[in-house]
Amino acid sequence: KGRLTIAGCGLHPGHMTLETQSLIEHAEIVLLVAPNPLSIQHILQLNANTEHLGRFYNMGFSRPEIYRQMAKRIIELVTAGKDVCTVFYGHPGVFVSSTRMASRVLKPLGHQVRMLPGISADACLYADLDLDPADTGCQSYESTRFLLTRRQVDSSAALILWQVGLTGEHSMDHFQPGEQGLAALTKLLLQSYPADHQVCLYEAPIFPGFEPKKDWLALADLPGAGAKVNTVSTLYIPACQAPEFAADRLAWLGLTEADIH
Ligand code: SAM
Image (cartoon, rainbow, N blue to C red; front, side, top):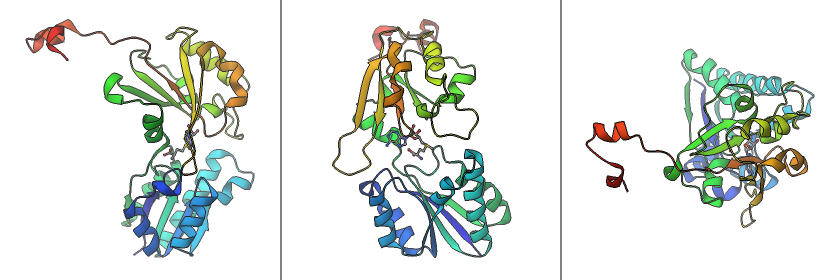
C-alpha cells in the first residue's frame, strides 16, 4: 500500500537531518519544493527519481490552486501504491498547506502518513536574532491573517509575522504585498508599539556560510520599506515592555514577585 513521508530540508543543504536524508535515499519517488539550487542538487544526488512540485508555481494558478495541484499529485502517487517522500523547504508542516491537504485525504484511506520536522525560518530567526522565546514568550502569525482578524497583541512578548511580503494580498493571485498592506499593518501595530520601536525585516541565509539579512528600522518607517520586503522576508517585532506579574496568581502559590527569578 502506498505511503507518504512528509519531510523538510531546512533552508539550505546543511540543515538536512540524517533521518530525512536516509528517507529520501530510500523513497520510491521524491516530490520536491526546495528553496535553492544547492538543495535541489543535493536531493537529486540522494535520489534521482525526483519530481519538481515547484513547477505548479509557473502555470498561472492562484496560490490556493497551486497548493491543491500539489496535493492532488501527492495523493495520485500514494493511492497508486507508491512509497512517496515529499520534501519541502524549511519545516514541512509550517505554512505548507498541500502536505496537510494530502494527509487529510490519505489517512482515512488507510495510508501511512508521517511528518518529520525540519529547520524552519523561525528556528533560524531564534539563532540569528538572538531571541529565546523563554525570555518573553513569542507570538507567531501569518501577516495578513494577523492584520485582518482581531487579536490581543501582547507587546511584552516577541511577535513574528510570516509572509510579511504578502501582507494584504487577499486576491491570492500575486506574490507581492497588497498595495496598502504594509501601511495598514503599521497602522495596526502602532496601536500597541511606539512609532520609534525598532523592528527587523529578517532573511535567513539560503546558502551555508552566508550571513542573514537583518534590516532594522523604526516601526513608523515600515510602509516605506517595501523595496526591502520580499516573499521570504519575516518581520520580527521585539517586546517593548516587561510583562506584569499577576499578584493574585502569585498569591495562589503563596509567592511574591521577589520569589521569582
Ligand atoms: N515551511 C517554511 C519554513 O518552515 O520556514 C515556511 C514557508 S512559508 C510558505 C513562507 C514564509 O516563510 C515567508 O513568507 C517568510 O515569512 C518565511 N521564510 C521563508 N524563507 C525564509 C528565509 N530565508 N528567511 C526568513 N524567513 C523565511
